[in-house]
Image (cartoon, rainbow, N blue to C red; front, side, top):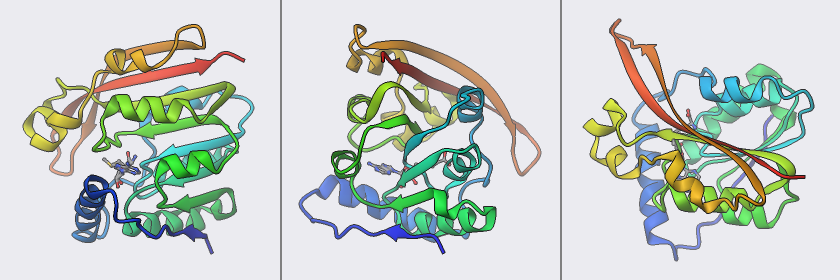
Length: 219
Ligand SMILES: C[S@@+](CC[C@H](N)C(=O)[O-])C[C@H]1O[C@@H](n2cnc3c(N)ncnc32)[C@H](O)[C@@H]1O
């Protein structure tokens, strides 16, 4: 059985508590929120890495990306605010036979980073934290080992879906802008806008516009 490390909230972080409650409510409202498939930008960026190591995934949701990474040989620490999402992620990992390669936790990401060795890969896909994209990149960059990779994917502010939803409109960000947080003497940075389409349950195709920040920390 997969182990989930449960954090005792300090209740001194009202914004994060409210964000956590909103995500928890969303997950509890449906038996599954996401597709169970890994995100394509993750697969595109990571599949070719020949030597997997230690990975940190922040905002893992129901666990499809963490399970995919573990299946590729990564030893994963997967973080999310929602206990319900983490329970589903743990079941997905057990069903996929990779439970022993993933540690799930709802601890604040700063605490996870402070209590861990640096990671060879740090990823966050569509997390859109309340503290914003620059905070996310800055925080996650501090967890990357020399020679390691940082991958942050978000809805771009011009993404049609994000433009329709007030929450996403305020938390979407442009990878090129938030990549300012990375010192170019220490990082090789690629910040791109990528479009993809998915077939929705009602049969229509939806266009997505992603911000993709992929950065390699010099060794
Ligand atoms: C849009 S979902 C994406 C889930 C998953 N990455 C995926 O693509 O299927 C955003 C997730 O980020 C989590 N989240 C938001 N802010 C977070 C934070 N500060 N720390 C950890 N998780 C966070 C939410 O609980 C939610 O599960």
